[in-house]
Image 1 (tube, rainbow, N blue to C red):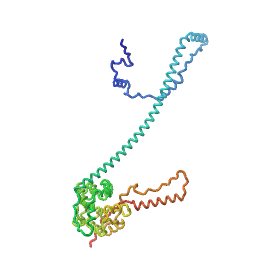
Image 2 (image 1 turned 180 degrees about the horizontal axis):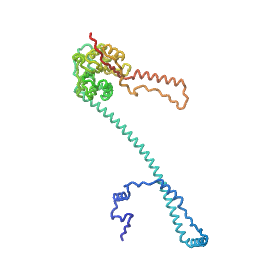
Image 3 (image 1 turned 90 degrees about the vertical axis):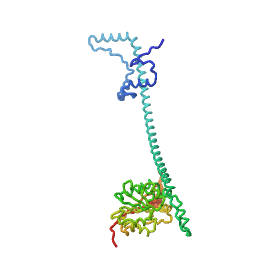
Image 4 (image 1 turned 90 degrees about the horizontal axis):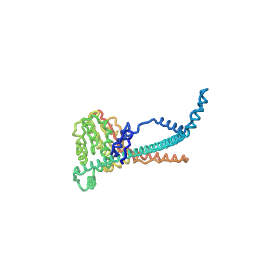
Length: 425
């Protein structure tokens, strides 16, 4: 005989509905909010649980006394007799009810303890998940920074490859016999772009550093960058809509700039300035000249810039910082035969003597802290430190500060000045 399907609380089940998807769908349809459990009042639940534990075993006999004066004793006697006569039938049922109540209450208590255990595990898992999520986010940030660094390296390599072969400077015949030809040939054979990367950093890093000049150059209409290198400053100004030109003596760097659609010429800077009308420029940045050329050529350059700049135009002179031996040695790698570090006060005095006004000094491009000498840390770990030791450590750290200031100070400084009124001779 086939089994008869018992009807469920919501009606008879459909035959053949044994798949998990159908079962899951039916369970969702039986709750008002889908697969979630309906919310409940936890305080009410705990109150009912306490009452269940308090009253599950209470089966007190009913009140046998009666308050009636005449019939009271008779009614009490009838109740006692009836209870004795019906006890054989009622007491087993009451015992079973008490046993049922005890099992139900015990099951509810076990379920409560189990739910509390689940709640504790949920809290632990939630804490672990939050910690793992924080670690995951930290790893994502680390990978993001790492990939950004790799992209920057790739960009640098692409820039080097773009300008490496097609823009080599043509060999220039040098007179033989004085021994300088071999040194010049060695310098010409150097990869200029690799040297730029080694000394000045990537183009993006240089652009970030040279944005400090932008407030002084906004509003310029005819700007000239002397010694523009790879043209980072020209790129900044072109994005600001400023008409900017550059002059560079190295053919490789000129070709690199032209590959980036920059207006850069390889000409003699003095001939170029002499050909310009007086007062035709409203901004000049002089890089890789002061500190690289003898003082006589620098004075000539300042006089020419003074003539070619219009009234109140700005002149910015960027040069290696003589207070940093690291910077001097680094720039000596780039220009070993023409490095002439100049004190900022000397450069300011030259600007004043050539007719410029109110020169100010900005120290630029500080070395990262990891390049400096680290100060000593005095860890007592609960011990009493000798005052003489403290003084010794303090003096050593003060000396480290002085050495860092001498060896690892800012790499460059810039003198910012403006034109004064020309005095006709």
